[in-house]
Amino acid sequence: MIEVSDIHVYYGESYILQGVSLALNGGEIVALLGRNGAGKTTTMRSIVGYNPPARGTVVFAGEVISGQPVYANVRRGIGFVPEDRRIFPDLTVTENLEVAMLPARAGREPWTMERLFSTFPLLPQLRHRKGGAMSGGEQQMLAIARALAGNPRVLLLDEPCEGLAPVIVENLGEIIAALKGDIPILLAEQNAHFALGISDRAYIIDKGAVCYAGTAAELLADEGIRNRYLAV
Figure (spheres, rainbow, N blue to C red):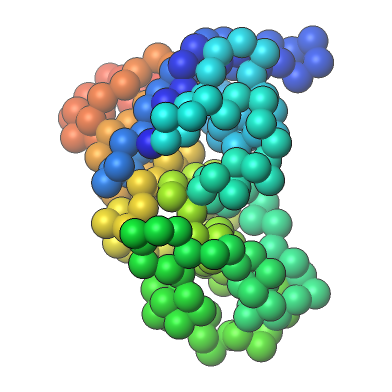
């Protein structure tokens, strides 16, 4: 579904991504791991279109999308939940979902309001609450539901666990794992224990380059690699 090939990204004079390559296939969750500042968020933003690569390509569903605007990539079917969630604080839960609704895609079960509320059972009881009055965990659930409301073909989650209580993280992991049957997910996360527990494969990014690629089980079994690239 997504193939990133040798992308190079700069912020002004800063050379952030130095030849990152990765792939996301249908029916899987792939984790992108690394310490803070390693390049995880920049990789996600580059795929979506916020920070287009200076070199290299991003291919989505067989189509080169490098350099295309964000709105066009969302319409193509890329759902993105940014690290800061970006929900509308003055809109209710229902209104946040309604403004994100896009038409259903051929051959796929649509993400209706009823399906979203069924998938995220915390949200129905909060449907009239404004986004700015919600807890961090509630906002994260809403942010993911809002991305799904656009009926995407893939889902990109950037640091979904950040700042959340352990019980909320556990609940969130169950929901994300259950989504795999409907939509492939690329998950950028610093919490390796969480990410590897629900992922099929993993990449580790360090100093703007991929330094490890393998199955989640292989990485869980390799304490040396985890200590070298993920330990704080």
